[in-house]
Length: 486
Ligand SMILES: [Zn+2]
Image (cartoon, rainbow, N blue to C red; front, side, top):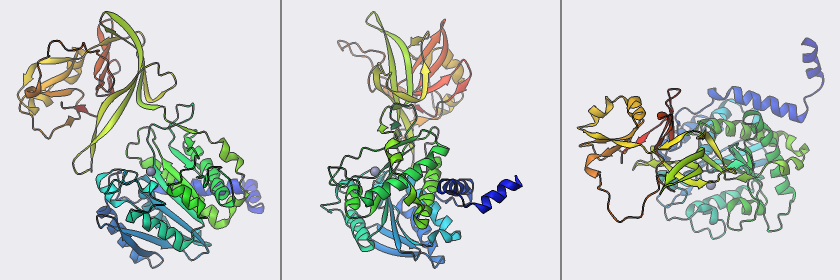
């Protein structure tokens, strides 16, 4: 052991080993730099202003007001460092893509205590480029423009701000920070594309010049890091040239541009682990730019990153057999759990939906359930109408499910209750409708329907599927996050 230590001292670490060393340190010390004031994806412009103002206590940070959004929210740039190489990082150009904004505030905490990384560089951060979109947690800005299609027309003040910042700095490197759907996977694998990369093309011919080549080299290094912590969970975006997009144009204007898309990771709905992966990989990339290490990286590895595909569901149920009009059909189900927001766009609940039916053998699920040898059973509504929510809470839910009931009627339920954390759905007794005659017969399994049903074996309920979640009654494992109030 002692000898090995000596060898390490005598021979400087190779680029790859050094990079690994740095990323491992960043990963293990992350918790001491994490910005604890941000804990979920739906924070707003007002939440980050005090965090930006706090940076004023460190004279090395320079805060510039770049201008305002359409609704008058300030867009600021935070700069630090005195080196020659300018690196510009901007996040949340799409208002509902906030993972990297969280990361930027973690990076500020790191930079307060670790200034040596700044040796040859100057960093410039624009967190939350689209604060009006963030307010509504939507992609587009207040007048419905997708900023990422406004790089040339520059009709949005937010787009003008980004363009002006890039031009004033002549940034050498640009990090274009986004989120992508959690349903993206690395092509032909069940692995989610937790992080996806792109060195955008700057022309239809997809030429690789030095500017774009350097972006590819940085991506190769970041990919190596992500592979350590989320093996196989990296995808590469299509490099088809989009003449209206910022990434493509900023590459064209001479800034080596790296697109990072934060996708999904199992059991990480608020993307806190992905936030950490961004922290580790972006800081390691900055370090590599600062030292110039990235120059020795071959871009060949870039080509080997698997492509992004969109073949994931939250839950995939295979071999489900059900009857309709006297015939049996065996299908796979692709189930998604959609986030339904409250009015202030600060919180959400899930509403499950059957998004595909049939042969889904080329698709994958974050969760999978094989329904082979199980019998499909429609869940019934319990005949008793409960007087209020208090009575509902006292129910023995497991017993209800075992008896074949998936829905309970409740009287005088407040209108604002849209869901509960109990493992059945609720129907407001006032809304129970009498089935009409002469309607087209409805299949018990249908596209876009809420997935709520039972799976039995020898007439015993083994699984209850409620609102697209699983209650494994055989193993007594309830994984239902919320049921619906209909
Ligand atoms: Zn985006």
